[in-house]
Image (cartoon, rainbow, N blue to C red; front, side):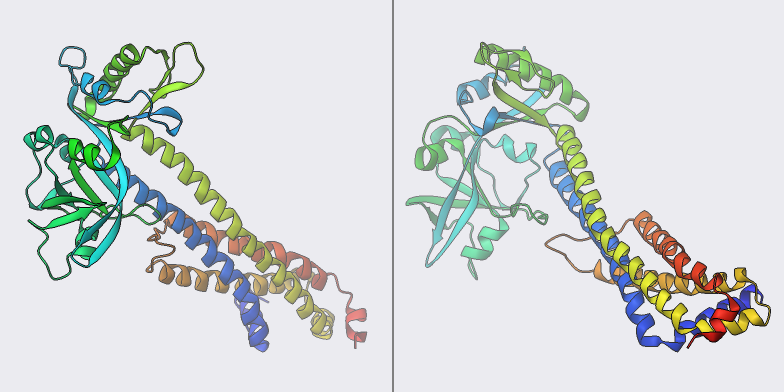
Length: 407
């Protein structure tokens, strides 16, 4: 019996029990689709986070207090970083205070997750553009004017059918005048809405909302992407001197003098991307491993069904052996049957995964990696060969006389 005849015989064997064959391939289908889709979700999540980080700017440095606190980060410390002599590679420094607040306009109110008080330089440093209206100025900051720039989500929630420009909104009992609408940003699944944002002068926000304590962070813009490391070193040196710390850490933070804790932490976009890449890789591998379990279950199902098939066709095997069919031909036919079941399930699984990737899953747009498709198909073929080998050997090792006597 040649290869073509063996494949035809295997196909007839599969077609003889259509429902059973369909249920068997379903296990492989689910496994392959799950592997591809979950890996795609992991990659999509990683890409979304990377885009958000890169949107902050490739030449920015963020200084924050270590341990989640903000002790030591004062407005005076932030302004000391804008020193043309000690920090020639620093273009701008934007101290930031941030809080959540309820914004009210007419009969509508909306809880804003990020009500930011800062300097005008923050907009350029964070790649935050004004879509309509104007930005506030240094004069507004100096005079503490209560003007605000609102994100598109805030506009949608508060100003249905109304023009926000020039409108006065109440923020926790304080009036702010909307002078501009921020250009819409792409929000990533699983992260805070990038458009649910209000930006106002630092002085006004501190006076009306946060008080005059420590600031949350400082956004430092370097003179260029190639000067980020130099700017980070200069900022770190100034902070060490201002905060009375030393022993610069590898992460850009410094250990507080006389203590083991760190007074501040510095991160730039490249460091954030490296951290994100490591976390995303672990997350994706974990998702793929979980999905691979279903492939294993599908392979066990193939073994079970093929053992049943061998038992049902014992007399047929005996007749073929009595007519001179060699054990290798018998074994190959059952291996081909098992592999065909696995390949069919794998192929349909790939189609289901590609279709599923067109939809948003848990807020993430999946990104299918060709390598995961090839790997999933390869594993499905290997499963057919591996899990089909046991029943195939059993069929090949049947003695013709025993097979012919089988009832």
